[in-house]
Length: 256
Image (tube, rainbow, N blue to C red; front, side, top):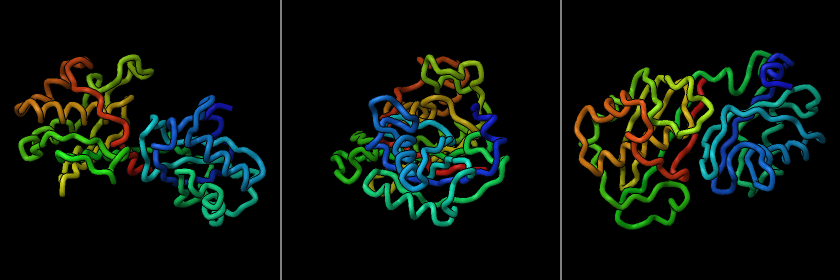
């Protein structure tokens, strides 16, 4: 069954989950590797007595976290009321690295991926000379001071509808469609922890991590206003910065 066929099949149950990506080799089921999707299916099978297909809003890579990730299963055959499903799943997923925040009944037109209109990612950087053990595997430790006030120009330059080919890993499947609309790119810093929030109508493969890596590289070099615009306009990956490590990235909000 294709995802489009699945969308029209019937009512859905939408699950909002959170997970620590440190425990997983990404969202998608893989052979001989622990995945979020597979672990969630394990829990569903114990609760429901069968193993349903689970469709997620997007893939996340190994080590990437989620504060709010939305996926759905078909309601057909599910004998547990949606309002009880989250608690039942959490009983089986305890200590797995996944928690189910809610389970809600949705109509046949809902699709976790195709109904999504925008996503917000958050990237965390621990920006002190010493490592913080509480952010191990949950933030990028970067010991060179970043002056976010001198980098304010970058926030507005990332925003808008652009061809973001420069911020996409080479060899990605969507090389023919690289135009995205970034709604905001906001940076704040408090007590050594930098938080970068990025919202867009869609993201290319590794786009946020490359945006963050570019931001950090430009801050280190003391780049001037207009530099981000120039990188975007060149539409070549080699002009952007390195890809930031996976452990600092969180899928934070899904908009429908």
